[in-house]
Length: 77
Image 1 (cartoon, rainbow, N blue to C red):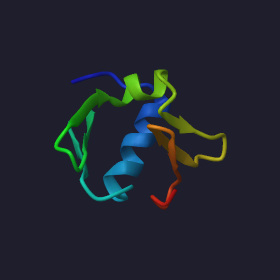
Image 2 (cartoon, rainbow, N blue to C red):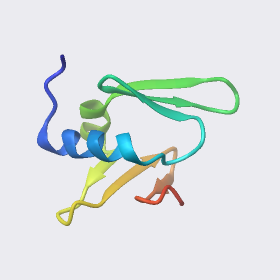
Image 3 (cartoon, helix red, strand yellow):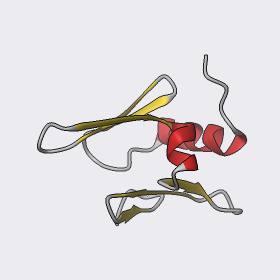
Image 4 (tube, rainbow, N blue to C red):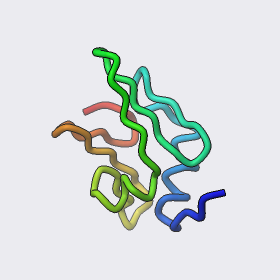
């Protein structure tokens, strides 16, 4: 099993209970994004955190940024 950072574990726990948008699903320690054109992004949570796509604020709020679109906890831009 992949060892996740504390921030990544928080993100994983949150994503297990909330969906950010249609077509996104969680498997093991990786996030899979399926886009309308059929393309797929498959990266570990730690990779997404390191690259700045996923952030955890001091208050525990989680944000996902992808292709210039920012997604908050509720999954709405």
